[in-house]
Image 1 (tube, rainbow, N blue to C red):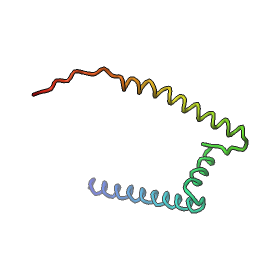
Image 2 (cartoon, rainbow, N blue to C red):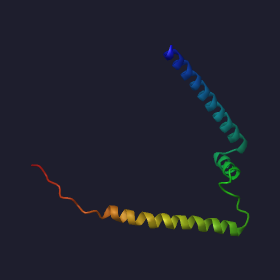
Image 3 (cartoon, rainbow, N blue to C red):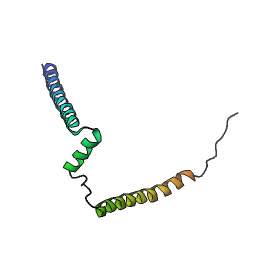
Image 4 (cartoon, rainbow, N blue to C red):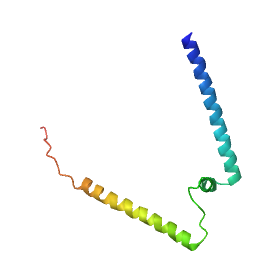
Length: 98
């Protein structure tokens, strides 16, 4: 009896997941057809969720570029020591069997 209930519950969950997946695909295709391109859809989504804001002035654009530069500098200064340590490891002696 418990095995039969488990199969029924599994089918219900699977059907519900399929409905949610179908809804998500329909929403994505509808949004894509309305936006016209994938990049425009992504831009509209990020503006709607306040991930980005439109750049209205040259000052906004300059501040945005400066922030990206600072992130690149930080990534470089974190990656350089890690790369240096990785490349300059002490070599271990390896025995060769003949």
